Length: 198
Length: 198
Image 1 (tube, each protein chain N blue to C red):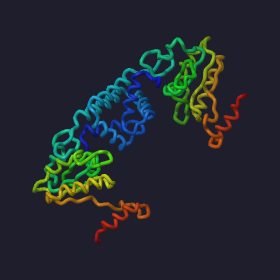
Image 2 (spheres, helix red, strand yellow):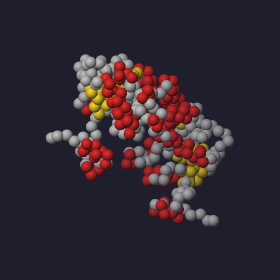
Image 3 (cartoon, rainbow over the protein chains, first blue to last red):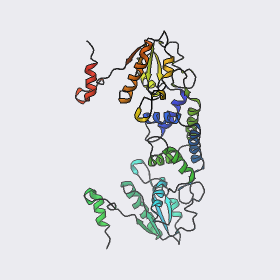
Image 4 (tube, rainbow over the protein chains, first blue to last red):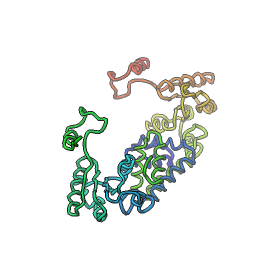
């Protein structure tokens, strides 16, 4: 039971619904908002509604977009022969920052996880199969290197085999700038396994 | 440089403006919002604008309120003989939860802090002096027990002396349920100093 006016209580509740935001943080954010210039608060509110209202999934790759198909799928300068498969739209952002990949993307919106009750039908996989054509030469699977990510990568590669398209997996190994001493055994084993000739 | 549609970028920026929210958290919150039902996002936006729009400071005590004077100042069942002085509106909430104090409050909206360039004129002190009348018997200073809070308490008590009103300070000591072993020396010294007869 708190002793704030209703409008404050309500905003604290709204903030507390966000992931990773507890009651105390929600209270702190709310009191911060009360001290902001009114137009800034209105700007924040508009950004919320606008983001939710205008952003949809790209019908081709499943990325977030404000136009369909998304800017990557509709870019004629990108390579049609490679598709990089990622778990979430934010992974596209991460990869694009590296500026190493110029192909297309495909977003699974999750991974196969029997523990969480998520099977192959719960991820955006059927649309990936529809994208296979003569132009496509390689599918790079860039799911996260954890149990679910690996299992999903395995499953997808098995499903795609019959279509005769080359399926690759991003490399595991010691991070650049890291030290052998601090690498865990599984990473080290993967680094040895994936050694390349100099 | 990121590769999100403009509406997403904008919302990430807005979240990142909030205190304690970095870019990565802002990105996570934004992607969470995109997956919420539209009416929930609108509800959040409305709560923001409404809180900022309807909440003002009580002209008597300086607390946040949607009606002026606030519910505590206008409550006839509360004791006019005591005013508890706090730093922030949230401190009123904390004290009200304890249900031990039935007097009035006064919010300073800060503390005197020469380091931060905040002097006596930068806190809500003049209005406190205006509230001194024959009915008022005691002013309890409940600023935080840190350097600025203590200095502010000292300053206020000095200012109020000439008016002949009793000025008290909340007690310092070992927290209930705490252990002597883990108390710092200053707290322990204060606990000894403030000992009471059994």
